[in-house]
Length: 257
Image 1 (cartoon, helix red, strand yellow):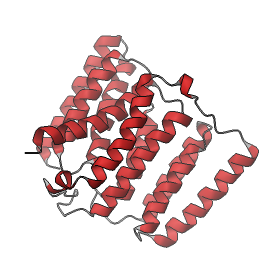
Image 2 (cartoon, helix red, strand yellow; image 1 turned 90 degrees about the horizontal axis):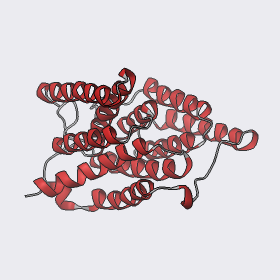
Image 3 (spheres, helix red, strand yellow; image 1 turned 180 degrees about the vertical axis):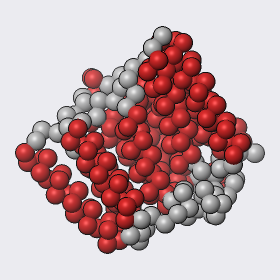
Image 4 (cartoon, one colour; image 1 turned 90 degrees about the vertical axis):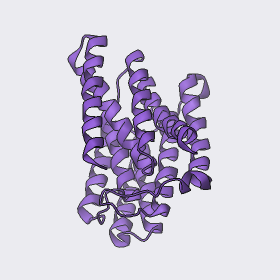
């Protein structure tokens, strides 16, 4: 990612914050809008590192949506998803360290108990499974996986940390997010024309491991489906995920030739 891209997204985030403040007349709501737009861009870049246009289009979509649906945005949850994706897909270009794994583990445990939801542990388990399959830090991943499983059993036994949202409780945006997550996992994984357009590079300028990108896409899709049904996402949260998925697809349609 070059300096021009950095400046562009910082400027766009500041504009989004200012517009959010103007629309709501609340400074902190403006900051939340800007944070949502930035995290939309960042997550899209993890999903589709080969096409910078995907992240920009997704950021525009999320700004448009968030200005008209002023519900709370779970920024820490989005940052957690971003951290998981970066650990799995290796976009940083740096070796995953024990500190990285323990940091994500600690944040997951905090969010799981703070939000009283075991789904965070389940998603972490999926991420750790991907890392184990990819043979990355297998010993540390195995230990964290065992601890995650034990914590999940504890929550399952002594706490009531799971509440399923029935179909009747879901709005059209929720259902659209679930359908999009499943369809995009298939499309982004197996579309050879999408993969072949531009060679994806990590932050160090080296070619990324396509298998790790694939695992990251599966993880993100599974996370969206799980959180829609079990985490009571706000409309703003769901619209951010839709922006990521549709921004990626529309970018592909526009620039595929």
